[in-house]
Image (tube, rainbow, N blue to C red; front, side, top):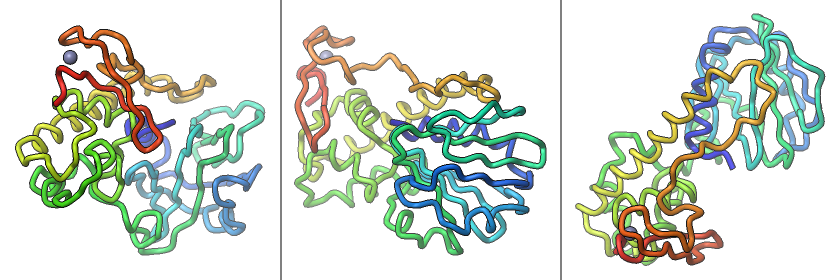
Amino acid sequence: MPELPEVETTRRGLHPLAVGRRVVATRIYDRRLRWPVPAALEKNLDGRTIDAIDRRSKYLLFRVGPDTLLLHLGMTGSLRAFTSAPPRMAHDHFDIVLDSGVTLRYRDPRRFGALLWLRPPADAHPLLASLGPEPFDPACDAAYLWGATRRRTAAIKLALMDNRLVVGVGNIYANESLFRAGIRPTIAAGRLTKPRFSRLLVAVRETLADAIAKGGSTLRDYVDSRGEPGYFQLDYYVYGREGLPCRICGTAIKSVRQGGRATTYCPRCQH
Ligand SMILES: [Zn+2]
């Protein structure tokens, strides 16, 4: 599943190709994404100039004058750029053709992605309005996380993955960040001290920044690449390493279920 680093890498890859460009044609081949692609989308988008591409959580926001084209990659979506678009394949659901001749093509085998048209103010849209701060936002500091989790009995890992507290920390990055911070994923968020939130926030930012940096190395293949943009294979400390020795202390990594997802941690390094 594309997580924040993959979405941010997509944004950075698109930026030089699409910002300042006019859309000359929008071709929707299959409107059945997570929500139906709005019938008027082509009419709204064609002839308009993309002024900026922002990211909020895992949403890509193409700013078009006062309006916003929202794209979410869902579970299996990817947006790639072609200077000469090859024939459309199965699972290619729409093309956006720019005045430079570049075609942005969306592929999504499972069709959990979304393409929506937002009138201003975009931030008030239900998908965006309830989102917590970005992890790199200076306002998202240890004092904020500590204050927002007092009296919360939910486990810290589940709190960290709750988009209302902070956005963009998916399962992989929650597991890895908690390891780096030395925090047991199952302890109640409300019991975590402010200094430990401070260490956790540093770990979240470092883990995401490492993945984004890794993604940067895939950008050179962004244009005209037919390959699937893969997941960034980091050298994970705990994710997917159940039963293997901890890279720090050698203890076997344990796995438990939390909120239907696998949590992996080192019983010795994390407490
Ligand atoms: Zn360990």
